[in-house]
Length: 532
Image 1 (spheres, rainbow, N blue to C red):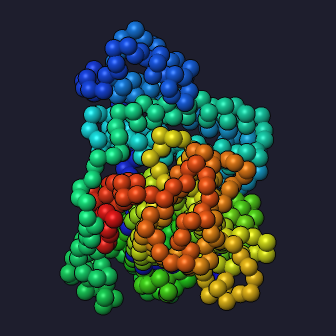
Image 2 (spheres, helix red, strand yellow):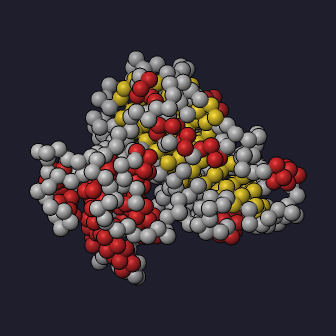
Image 3 (cartoon, helix red, strand yellow):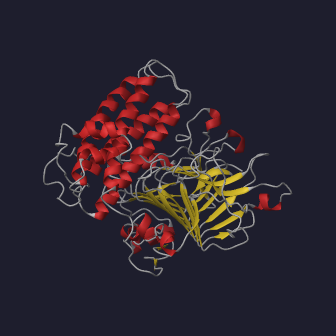
């Protein structure tokens, strides 16, 4: 089967990233709350960060190391150092783009690094404006800093096989700049806890608007969408894409390019039934883009990139590569506050790349074989179907490969009230295929399954190693109140990082607690459960 993405409704509330002013350091940015203890010092705090020497170096010229300032003020100084080093890295990246400076082993690896670093620079600036003693602002800052660290990992993975006179300089510059990002995240994380934000002890189901269209699509626009009459629609708010030429555009990419940049108003792109052979990229300056398909069984977007053909995994979305081309992404999301409703992501290895930031998937179906939900976003899946397919001979199926690589990152995969089953081909086959819930791509891999149905395809052990004992002591894999023949935990792995969760453990991974969805999902009108 072709690897493809089919659309019902897709809301991308992308961040306004690239026009934010660089923050200045002032004494009134943070309050005196969060002061270090009398016996503590900046040296003590820096020793607890991932890169103590870089921490001390960034602070010694700004504040006296003999006083006890607030942790937030130190975090802000660390962020300023990160912004300064990021600017130097931007210069190195520019030089690396000259012919022969860095010879790629995978196409687009340098382009990936440049794009990701631009997002990082904007995220750092935005984070600096949020370092205040307010829980929500600090949570946002943590989300942006975690995304920046994910950008570092993605770039370095793409450069692993590169060569050339500037390759080592580029890698060293990345490591130096992002050491300050990691330290900043560590300091911000010390200032806020994730527990205690519970809004209620009972499940709340939220939904607004009529069935099929979001609440912000007014009655007149709904009638026009249903009737297919666009003659009176304001072109600044709604356009159509139709492969047969009957719409405003024939490709989704053209419609995205047409949409206004950095807009506070939503642009609705209706994608008519058809197969769209293209690689759709929604840049970070295309804010508030909404894609609405005619149905997940009739509107398809697909391309042909894969790692097997020399592309980076990051750049491979979307594709029809097939199982023998290796990693081939159907959809990659690395934007903040993104919601998808009734979409289908169909692939084999690495189907859905939940790369970074905060994401929500409601009633979506994800098909694949190896690591087919992977990445380092803070993401919640609800009421969807996760379908394991027939892999190539000798392979096992692994559903998730979460890549949290820093203990202070507030990221992970939360799968709630979903159905985990085998595809018809796999279920009817006489071939024995093992299927696992996940494996640790990085040391602090975090994945939970809650209130979900697990078919008999799930191995009794549940989870699989990545390489030897990598991450087995530091990962967080949890299961809570699941059902079905694959759900019993009696024979699950006995790793230190695996646990059968209680209510409090599970609540930390709900929509309201994990991605603050109760504060932004209402604007989409998509239904969601904010608790358990």
